[in-house]
Length: 276
Image 1 (cartoon, helix red, strand yellow):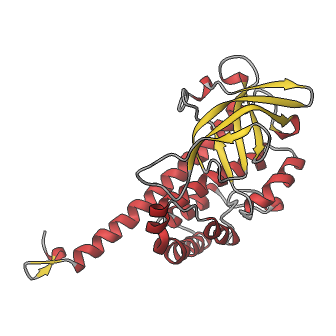
Image 2 (cartoon, helix red, strand yellow):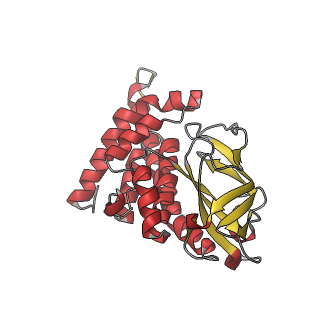
Image 3 (cartoon, one colour):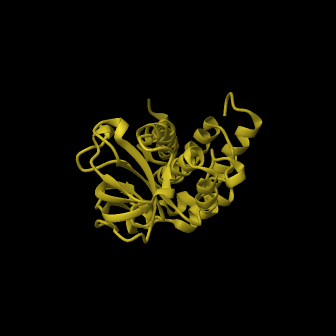
């Protein structure tokens, strides 16, 4: 807590307490049984953790990126996998809050900030991960709608979430041809692959998200046509810090567990901690 303000210390304490009581005792079960802990995340949202750096007029907490980093670091001492999904959810809500018009902000953000609904970020494709500018998922404009075709891979929350922030190609090759559409589960033509088998992080389901002639209203586009790459990268600027914060919290919890083991475990008549 060194160097933090009194408010930041309070955010940290609330998040650490929540992690210790509501997440850590269940982390192993969530992973083993592949449970997406919806009710626990909704409890976290009641503390303001569903839209941490989203504006308050649509239900967000209006906090800074540093405050956010402190909260995610603290929450991930309880369950890194779940906190990492929450960080992606927060990034999606921020993108809608920042780049959406007033109608979009008020339509999507309140139910996402309360975690009544959950969001997924759809950028990665089978052939384009870090090279985001080469994505192939296409959206053809037809009147007041786009017809979306393609697929996204390794999407956190895919199939279990309600809102999908999708990067797709509406123009020519390269970053200037990419736009951003917000889809809702249940739209005709939106489907999901099988749940991926993973060796960890099983409290967040991971699936392919598939678009087959999926019709999306133009009113669901964030920003202007061709602005999608910029929106995606600005989202990731914060998202990368969020994930780093989750890693730091997991490392902190690991050090504490190791420290506890050294004081409890005895060999040759004394605790391991008495050795060099």
